[in-house]
Structures are given as structure tokens and as C-alpha cells.
Image (tube, rainbow, N blue to C red; front, side, top):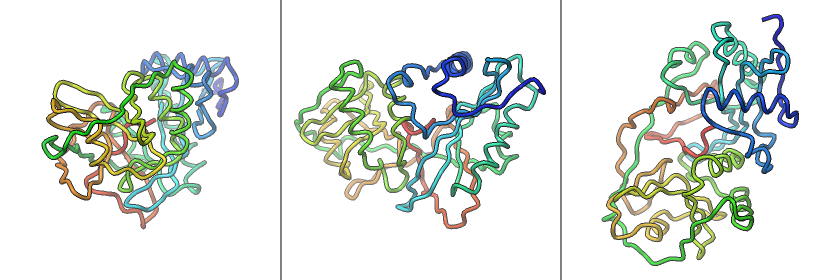
Length: 296
């Protein structure tokens, strides 16, 4: 432990950044390099890492964001990319990184949150984090009337499309006033490059981006990116077809004219939400589904 050094915010130092990326690929099978090379890794995402020589052996990353919960705005810290090289585990490195970050940010935010896998569900409560049960939101397509629209699929490798995606993401409204995120442009662009590259659509009439997957008779809606508040009923009419039987939301939707079914969310291995806050005025929406495309 005495040979290890704590470093932070080193994204422009290629030797450390590439070592971090190698560890992320090894542990989570994810990549950050293209995200960096395209200029998407901004100052809202900071790595805190232990290095041995020039090798990153443990990491905890912080995203500085603003959460919208029940129409109220809160300063928030999201903790993510918590990982340790296999031969450096059982040394308490994740604990030390978490303690350091808590001491750095506790007085600077209203709440902290993270998404933990099932192997560490007992770890984070030791530091004041409490699990929050999420819900699954679904609406039958029979409640919607399909409408012809100019829906165009975008390509992140086409310069004009990528520029449009970046512009709309930077100027977007929160996906929901019940549970939305402000300042998560970098995270959203990471998902565009690494997860949803084939699922980005533009409604040209309204210059609205939609992240959606069509699976058999189901539409999975992950995000809606618009400069103006979105009326979901009208939007869904432009992205469904007569073949769609149901729409599943991977965020907390709000309709004024359609009843949405909320059922207990079957938690996947990496999607247990934990929250830590000493702010008594925070009111969590219930039911809740945290926007998937804002999860770091």
C-alpha cells in the first residue's frame, strides 16, 4: 500500500488514461478512449485512482450533475466505474477511494448516488448509502394513435449527424420533472458511442432525438432529447407503428392524458440504485425509474 499513489483528473495524461481504460475493459468490458478522442470526456467526470508505478490498479470515478426530483433541483454526485485489478483486491482500495471522495464532496452536494452490482450490496450501506427500489413503466400501444412523421436514423460516424447529436444533447431539457438529470451530456454521448449507436433517431419535424429499440412488438424508449419540453403522447405517436403492442420506458415518464402501469422493477446485476443524503428536503418520486442513459 505504501508504494501506491493516489492521482486524480488525469484524462489528458495518456499513460494513465490508457491504463485506466485497460482496467475498465478488463473489469467491465467497456471503453472510454473513443469518448475521450471525440472530445466528450469533459470536466464533469473525474477519475480518482491508485497507481503502482504508471499502472492504474484501482479507480472510483465521480460525475458532477444536477438532479431534478419532483420538480426540485439538487446538486448531485454520481459515483461509478469502481474497479480494482484482480491482484490488488482485498487491500481495501475501493474503501479508501470512497472515503476520500466522501470527504471531498459531502459538503458540496445535496446527495450522492451510485448503481451497485449484487456482489457489493452489503458494502455501500456501511457508508450511509440506502437502496432505492426502481419501477418498470409500461403503456399499451392501444392507447396511442400512430402518426406519420419524418423519422430518420442517425449515424454517430457521419460528421453532420454527430454534430447534431452533440448540439441537441448540450441544449436539452431534462427527460422528466419527476426524475431528470442536468449536466449529463458527457454520459449521454458515451452511451451514443458505446451502447446505442444503432438506436438514435431524429424526428425532423421537431428536431427531437429519440433513443429507442424495436424488439418484436415492443418499443423500448431510453431517452428523448429536445430543446423544448416534450409532450410524450404526441411524441410516441410519431415513433410507434401498428405492429407495436407496448412501450417500455427506461426513465420516469409523465403523461397528462394516459395512465402508465408501474410495476416492481426486476433488478439486473448492475442496476441497484443507492442514495446517500443528509438533506431533509429531498423528496424522492415514487414510483421511480432513474434514466438509464444518465447512469455512469
